[in-house]
Amino acid sequence: MSKKKEQLGQGLRALLGNIEKVESSQELKKEVVQELTKNTEEILLENIEINPFQPRKEFNHDELLDLVQSIKTLGLIQPITVRSISSNKFQIISGERRWRASKLAGLKTIPAYIRLADDQGMLEMALVENIQRSDLNPLEIALSYQRLIDECQLQHETLAKRVGKERSTVTNYIRLLKLPPDIQSALKNKSLSMGHARALLGIEDTAKQLHLFKKIISESLSVRNAEQLIRQQKKDGNDIKSSPNTIEHPEVRKMKDRLAYLLGSKIDIQRSAKGKGKIVIHFNSDDQLNNIIDQIED
Picture 1 (tube, rainbow, N blue to C red):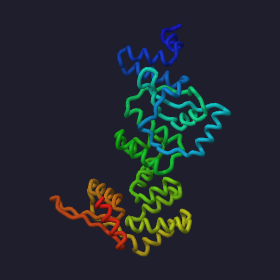
Picture 2: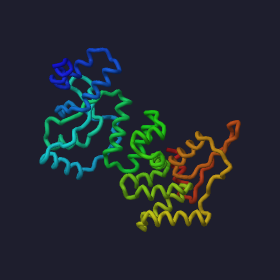
Picture 3: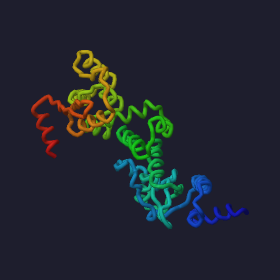
Picture 4: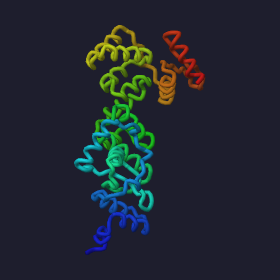
């Protein structure tokens, strides 16, 4: 029996222990990762901690109880994925819901794949695996995509390949983060669909977005009806668009989007080549003006 097979026969934890004693060559790490991702080991639940980079922050209680019952009846079918952080201590990369349900089911150990990753690598793996495997709402997916772009320095094209999506799909999800908080909240609780949200993105004025959003919800409009309503708004000239001849600096656009998000109103930034200019905050009623003033004071 080869030395490698002898090590694997001693258990994955013994193999991990040997890794700490040898030189950290890239070839060895790749070889070990390949072996570890093909095997599972039973790990004590008390030796596993939650992943601080987990994109999902809320777990449906009823669905969790259904999984608990399934685990009690059939056992845990899909192992979780963890990384080793110290001797006999592990951190979840993906599978926090399964880990929580296993604890509620009274299990002492859980089957797990053990992987090696630094914090950034773990973040990327956790986000990609959650996007692909979890029933995330559109806003959670959008936030995960944005974190991959911001914290893992991924371009849209690269990100699309990592998650197995078209680039346009990734871009459409990220655009959801430009919507007002009320609309984002509706996406989060699934009272508004991705199709409705994409239609609302066709309206640039935040106040009009919110007005149409409330109409969609109150009248339970279908995506098609919502799209027709928004097309009619544009046809009637009720939506104000930027001049096609105006070239806006990307950083100025980011500032406008940020201020619009914070104040819940349309924002214009007029800036000269020398850096002078003004910020214009739009409002449609005294109530909206008072809300804007409250936000600024806060």
